[in-house]
Figure 1 (cartoon, rainbow, N blue to C red):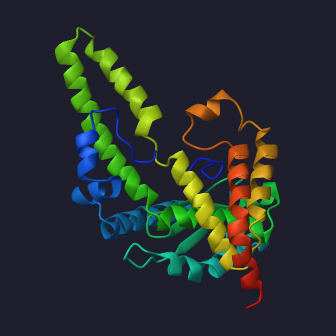
Figure 2 (figure 1 turned 180 degrees about the vertical axis):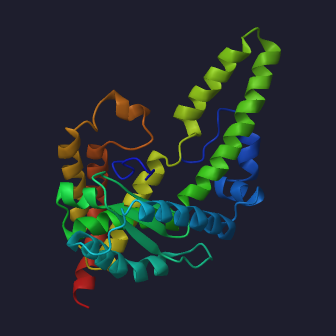
Length: 275
């Protein structure tokens, strides 16, 4: 999630033929590695940024450590952490940390390396159960574990290279104004591969979150009710043409996808209840 109703929330793909040769040589993650954004470096940089965010929130007296909501969030987070560590295949241990921010905003997000935040408004306004909180946290944990932000860094590199090459080719062979070309490139970047998280990555985070919450003993069905509550809060605006231009699946599309995943994760949940 980005820091603006992120949870209410593009895969690396070539931009026509312009980036084919590049993407054949390296995927998004490896491109990020090539330009110096390896997992360790990215996690360190994210950690520094996170501390700045926390410090700003602290100065505004917006950090919540004492309310019943904050205690519930931290309890769920701590229950999920061991399973998130088990799922970590990045080769770099995560120093998980979750800060509860006192705000009416419906928001939660994760940075590379496991630095997270959850806003009290998301829990209080939607009246989330512990299992629903687990669905949100598990979703965000999966974004970090699967290094979706790292992929986004690679996307930005590839996008910049591809659009620059494409612009030069078009400018040399046409009389199109350079300002028009620039506008077109911006639109391609906006609706092509320039967004932080793609629809695929959001669905990936939903699915990974289901597994984490199931292993921790939280009913995966709660992931459905989270999105039903999001629908109610947003007036069911997840449908319509606007969702086609969004990098996020509509709420109803996510619910449908989660329902399809339930048969594979419910046995995990049932097994965890026997521990």
